[in-house]
Structures are given as structure tokens and as C-alpha cells.
Picture (cartoon, rainbow, N blue to C red):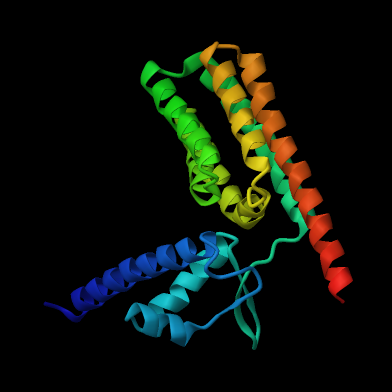
Amino acid sequence: MTAIAHATIALLQSSSLANVVQQEIERAILAGEYAPGSKLIEATLAQKMGVSRGPVREAFRMLEEAGLVRTEKNRGVFVRDIPIDEAVEIFDLRAAMDELVGRQLASNITTAQLKEIRGLVEAMEKAVKAEDAYHYHLLNLQFHDRLVEMAGNRKLTAIYRKLIKELSLFRRLNLADGWLLPISANEHRQILKAISAGDADAAGRAMFQHVMDSKERTIANDLRRQARATEAA
């Protein structure tokens, strides 16, 4: 085997390993294991995952492109702490995308797809009754991701998923207050009802308003956090 072939195989192995490392770090960030603002230590992660530092370094680069981490010169890599004004911009963009998705699904959703999202809504309602915020959060993410995927626009799906990853911490905090879970579940039930009825206008409005309500909850949560921080200081 030539030196070029050896180099190609090594590159492919390194690239594949970097993807695995990137996916694991991303999972940990989205699960809240690494809080916003926390520093990610290259050597520590390499040792923890049993890999060399090269794949971790490449994973950091991919995570920065995805908007989940930031690199500070001479300081290292940190989990991004998205400011509230950027979060609001993302919510506004997402609302427009979700309105389009709702209108399309009301006209084009299949019986099998409708059965699937009805099952997700019912699972969320069971999580509410069980006061299980953790699984509700996961089901909530899955519900919206599947709706966007069902709309069939691959470019929209890719952009949507990037935005959702950036908003993941805010969305988790929004649902951390148990009293909000029934409200959120009811909003999902209304979305399902409009799509089931084939009412494109109602489905678009329901999805748009759901995001706008989530934005307002995010702003209110941020103000409360600021007030608590001021009191503590």
C-alpha cells in the first residue's frame, strides 16, 4: 500500500472519529451537562473519550460552526452563552418558519404522519400528568423537529435544527417551571387540532403563536434571572 493510501485512510479515520467526538460533546451540551459559559478542556475531553487531542480539536471547530461553542484567543473554548437579544431574533425567525410548516402540513400531511404526531402530543400530556419535565422537554423537541421534517424542505430543516440547538438552553429553562407544562401541552394540542382539520390558516397561526408565546416566556425568565442576580449581588 502506498504512502498516499495510508495517509488517505488515516484522514478518513480521523475525520470519522472527530464526528463521533463532536456528536458526543454536542449531546452533552444540549443535555445541560456543560453549562453556558463553561470551559471545555481539550486534554480532559480527549482522556475522557479515549482519543487523541486531534479529533477533539476538530470537533471544537465543527461545534463552533454550529454555534454551540466559541473560541477565545489564549483562553480556550467555551460553551456559548447566547444573549437574550440574539435569542429573541432566533425566535422571530423560527416563528416565520413554523408558520410555513403548519400551513404546508395542514394541506399535505399523511394519515401515518398525523398518527405519529398525535402520539407525541399524547405522550407529552402523559408527561405533564407525571410532572416529568425532563421527558416533556425531549418530546417537545421531537414534536417540532418531526413537523419540520415532515414538511419536506431539506434546506429549511437544516437551518431550523441549527437554530434549535442554539436555543436549547433557553427552551429547557422555559419548561423548568412545572406550571408551564400544561400550558405548553395545550398549545401543542391546538396545533395538532388545526393540522388535523386541514385548516392551513389556523395551523399557521397556531404554530406562529406558540413560538411567540415561548419567546415571551423566555424574556420573562431572563428578567427574573437578572433580578435574582441583582438581589444576590
